[in-house]
Image (cartoon, rainbow, N blue to C red; front, side):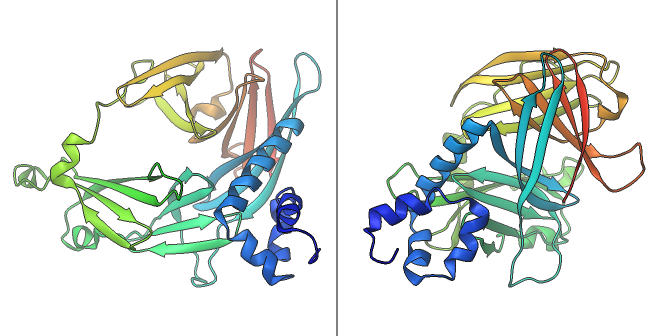
Length: 326
């Protein structure tokens, strides 16, 4: 293939499955250079989505036992009622520079990149590019918060500037735990910072943040602290929310139909009733909007093992259970 035009090589390799790209990196320096190009990554993601749509399979990002996995999920109706599924592990976050296990507490996705927040005494961030098999560790700028003994609640978001080069940035928002009342009136109750990938530096924007943040967008229902509410992203432009009250087995599944800076619209995908009590605790789920079915991932409490199982719930309230092999 070394004599083929670059555009043809790019077109062929962009259709190669992700699991086969990594061995190919060591095959040819020209290919390795191509894999690092932003245009190739974008084309590979697009072709992967097209192939997945034809097979009705989707890529899902999950945290299982504090580790981040990239999974291929396929949902199919065997008949008008019963569902069958295929779940296959495609990748797991690892770093050659950090051989010790690092637990992950949360993960965020944007444009093929995953931002992972570690569960450590002094948390760190790691950005994972599963298409290139690369990781980048980022020191958080809030180490002094943890060392001071003040308890902060910290949230992160990953995005990029709206330009051709897509310069990625990380937004970090922290606020003091309300139990530490004596700090609330010091003017230091919150902090907002942005990390720039190009400059490898953090910038404090706390004083100007009020001008940049819009109002808090509401959910399509009222909930209490004892109810189950779980969010999941659908592709990169929608949000799904799973809602279940503690006093009922009914599950509501909502998905955004429009998201704007100061407004959000929701549509009710369907209601599931009389589901098993094993679903009363969950924090990971996946939605197939077209088939009106969702998949909940949870620990297998029936067998008292550390295995992860997937519960597949359809619009007609069918329930299928499958063990996830990692």
